[in-house]
Amino acid sequence: MKLVTVLMLTALPLYCYAGIGCDLMNDVVNMTIHPDVSVTEYMSSVQDFSPSEETEKAFEFMKECFLHKSRETLENVLELQQTIYSSFWCAPY
Image 1 (cartoon, rainbow, N blue to C red):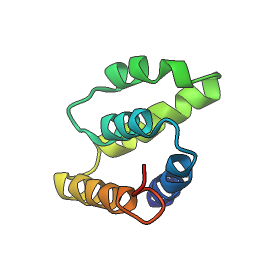
Image 2: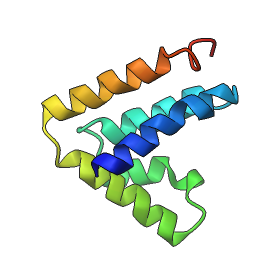
Image 3: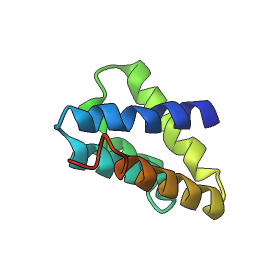
């Protein structure tokens, strides 16, 4: 799970560097991390980004992983997210 989280969050600067979809990506990441968003609610929100059943299962797995984390861990992930967003590569966007 930690590896998946790190890989997902390290890909954000590259996505932001392209200059498209940063707000959309930010919303999806926040919904993934937020403990009050249910799996059903999350899946309905990311349905447009799920071209296959395998992708849908991956989204569901990712959300369930975050639901089982402590508040402290989730706060640390949010802090990491903000560090990435304010990085040299994402700062202009």
